[in-house]
Length: 168
Image (tube, rainbow, N blue to C red; front, top):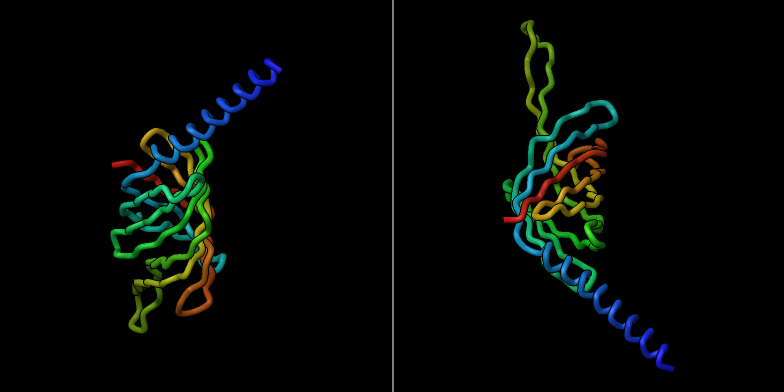
C-alpha cells in the first residue's frame, strides 16, 4: 500500500513537471518578432524565380494549452493568421492561404529591332504549409507554397521557402 502511494505521488509529480514544461515553452515563445522570408518558386514548372525578400512583424499569442495563434504583418500591408501547435522546440503550422505578388522580367524582341525588357507582376492565391524550430529567441520556419494565379491558371510551387523570425 505504501509503495502504491509513493508510485502515485511520483507519477503525479511527473505529470505536473511535464505540463509545466509544456506551458513554459508556450509562454517563452509568445511575443513580438520581426521576420524575413526568402526562397525560390517555380511558375508552371517552367520559370524559376527567386522571391523578393518579404519582411514584417509577427505576433505569437498563447491560445490554449497546446495551440498558438500566429499573426503576420507584412511590410507590404498584407496581414494573415494561422494557428500552430508546439512540441518542445518544434512549431507545426496549420495550413493557411494568403496572397503573394511575384515580380519578374522577361526579354522580348522589339518590332524596331533589339530587345525590350518587360516587367511583370502577378498575384497568386497560395496555400502555405510548414513547420519551425525554436532556437532561443529565433524561430526558423521551413515553408512550402502552392497556388494558382489570380489572372490566369498559372501554377506556383515553392518547396524551400525559409522564414526567419527574431524576438524583439
